[in-house]
Length: 260
Image (cartoon, rainbow, N blue to C red; front, side, top):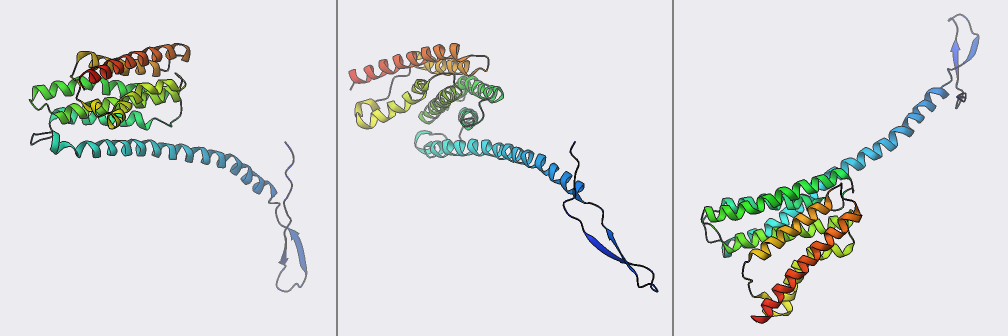
């Protein structure tokens, strides 16, 4: 270990007894070792502090993103309650869909977070819970006799947002190419087409096929996002899901065109 040298020497003056007028000079203790050791400690503390601060800020960013997404979902949803929900109370079914909206917001909040196995597990867990509850809200609406156009649309849009978020995450985590975004964008492309082609706005007849394909798409993306799924296996699975969704999109578009 190299020898530590003093950074500077300080001379101080001391006086002897009161009767003596002699003065002596002495050198103060060498402060170099203490100062250099303190500076060496700071070299280790600063990177640690920067790392901790980055982790702390990231920890605050995730809840903020979740809150913003959830607030946006509920702002749009609540603006349509009076027009399409002819019941005095919000209802257990819509409350369940609200829980699903929270879970979808958590999945959305994971966009931009670190691409780690822990984040992937959190995504899969939240999305799986939202998918399980997907069958509960409809059952509750029928059970309580509070089925409404609002509840059906609320449920559909939460599904669409969840699929969009999962497709973005599958792409960003390297599980599939950018083409996987088609899984989440087709729903919004369908809505945009209705602005240009009025016959595209005609309500579709609810079908078991459409419901099954929606659930299948979510399940496919959940499998793709599993940490144990390598890109060589996840990409073909995601591609199969996109093809099934494109088929459903074509069938619905053809039906609307025939009944325009």
